[in-house]
Image (cartoon, rainbow, N blue to C red; front, side, top):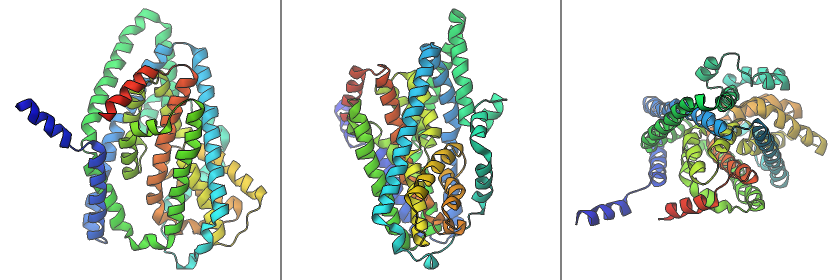
Length: 429
């Protein structure tokens, strides 16, 4: 009798995805109710920040432990070089396609033609300006120089992902090179990863509350009316991102005999969480875990997914190209094909140097729009909706990096089809 009751309870229990959706709707309602209430907005903002901080607390231990164990098990520096080369080429191709898609949609639908910039409300963007100025003068060499950590503990304390990945890769290779002596190190980091995945599951239980608070604070600050003048641009950005996932990513998946809908089914809860929090970091631990369960070699997952957070921001690339065209059109600036090609190249370079910077997509726009003659103050008019669009582009970034892990795994014949099908079947129960 007790077993029947327990079974009945599990059927009606809401999974994490539904809990987050309820948190999302509740947050919108709270935001509308407390619109303009500074005390309530601050309270919700602080609760949301605490949730994001919980996620950030567990990200680095998972990345470091999984990467060291995965690279050590790979053990072959030649194979690692091959995987790294494939990964970076794939990232560059997909990012370029995302930028081109944004430009095509902008040229076809002309979202900026329907806007009167003088009727829009401006926002303060001073917090991004200095970062953008330094980015314009940093150059490509500073990006490469920044990969090598002079102090790994400093990189860990600041959460600078690329130097951390660089160090973990070499530490993993060194551990493999000392053979039997390295076993104790691998056992330690395996235990660390298992502990952190357990902690991740506990933290995820607070996700609906964190989502409710973050969305509530956003709506309470902006208000629903503030979205109306820019609603066409927002809708167009979301449609473009959906096209990229379904068509572009779908075709890439098909080339490697993967059904994109299967992958999206696996990460659906993470996509909802990424959308609600507008934070890729919020789902990084679960994506690493799930891609391993989905059948991808853990070493490849641990290398590809964190690296993608720097080099494979497809959603951000779509937004940046579309927003740049939108602003140019709003100011009546006609961009020739040559100017748009220049814009695409500048975006490809600048975006790689912005990873890990707060408000990275917005900073990239600040660093590049002047190259096409758009006044910097134009960005003050879309700053208010940046958070809302960020929710969509974060979903694309998460889906893109998940697909990248599977494709690189398949290309290396490090993808377990049997394990993948078994995991899919378990999710459908």
